[in-house]
Every structure is written in C-alpha cells, then in structure tokens.
Amino acid sequence: MCKIKAWLKKEKEQTTVLLRNIPSTVVTLFVVSVICMNLLANKTLLKLDWIALDGGILISWLSFMCMDIVTKHFGPGASNRISILAAAINLLTCLIFFVASAIPSTAADYSGFDGIFGGTWFILLGSTVAFLTSAAINNGLNHFVGGAFKHNPNGKLAFALRSYVSTFIGQFIDNFLFSVIVFVGFAPIFWDGFSWTVLQCAMCALTGAVAELVMEVVFSPIGYRITEKWRKNRVGKEYLEFINKAVE
Image 1: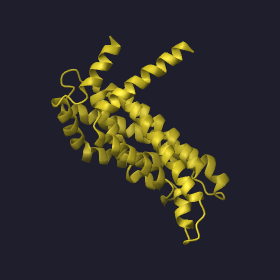
Image 2: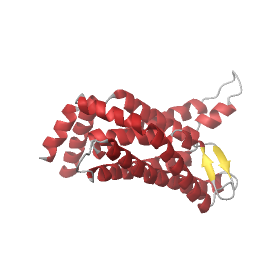
Image 3: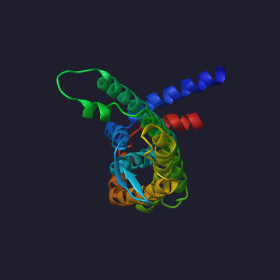
Image 4: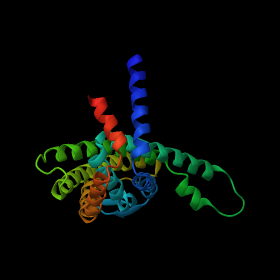
C-alpha cells in the first residue's frame, strides 16, 4: 500500500509539472480531437462486404500527430499521461452530454440531438479501451524508433520514420480494437442485428491506418517544425530537468 501511495504521489507531481510546461495549444487540439473521435464514431460512413469505415477516421490523425509531437519532445511517459487526461476529459464530456440529453424538453423535438449526444455506452467503452491501448503502443514505438537514430535523432528523417511507423501500427490497433468491441461484440445485441464481420474490422483498421499514414506524411512537416521550435526555445525545461533528476 505504501508503494502504491508513493507511486501515485510521484505520478501526481510529474503530471502537475508536465501540465505547467507543455504548450496548451497542442493539449487542447489533442483533447478536442479525442472528443470528436468519440462523437464521429457513431456514424458508419461506408459499409461494404469487405470494408467498413466510421466517422472517427476523419480526425483521428490529429490525435496521433499530437502524441508524436509530445513523445518526441517530452518522452513517451508524458504522452501517456496526456492521453489518460484526454480520455478522462472525454468521459466527463460524455457524462455531461448524457445528462443534457436525458433532461426532457417541450420546446421542440430534440430526438436527433438526444440520439447523438446521449451517446451509446458500448461505443464509449470501445473507444476508450482502443484509444488508451493504441496510445501506449504508439508512444512506445515512437520513442523506440527514435532511439535507433544515434547519429541525428533530431533530424527530419528520424522524426518522419518514428511518426510513420508508430502512427500506422497505432492506428491499426486503435481501429481494429474499436471495431471488434463495438461492431462485433455489442452491436449485434443492441442494434437489432447490425454488425461488422471480423474481415470488415480488419480491412477498416488497415484502410484507416493507411489513410492516417497519408495524413501523417502530409502534416508531419508541421509536427517537425513544432518540435524543433520547442527544442530551440527550450520549451518544458522544468519538466525535462525534473524527469532527468528522477531517473538519476
């Protein structure tokens, strides 16, 4: 019990220092993208025999790009902490949306509003599990691949490869876990038999991963410039020194 308390105290202290040091714009974009992913996942954009896509694919690339930026500059631990924070804020937002949808109103017909913002509990469960799992894998892979560049770890090639590899694998895992949990596990029970096959889930995951990789290729130069600016301006100096002392 004492070890758990000490660990929780340490985590709280590190998170407090991190939130004081990490630029708010990136955190804001990250949290908003996670919330939007959860809402957009309620709509299936495409459903064929061999592939199916939900609306979350339209913005999930932004979440992974933010994680790549944070991992590059602050490390995978910092990115994991921000991911947990984003998931917690998303859960709180969904709770507020649910309460708002549950309050009756005679002003007009809000059935459409209630249906969207009321949410579906198993979509929230699936998105949370998939997001946290893929985030941890993405951040770890990003850091691992970056560590392989001993000669020029801060170069464009290093940033690009660590982002491409981690995003593709992380996105595949995120899309696949979410699809299996929601559309294979729960949808047939609660949505009158509506479901995806495992093949559709796999193809959705693969197609989504490819799409997100393309987006990463397009926007990674922006991410690289952000990390270079942070490095030159010594952004997050307090947190980085704090982590180095903790390791020592």
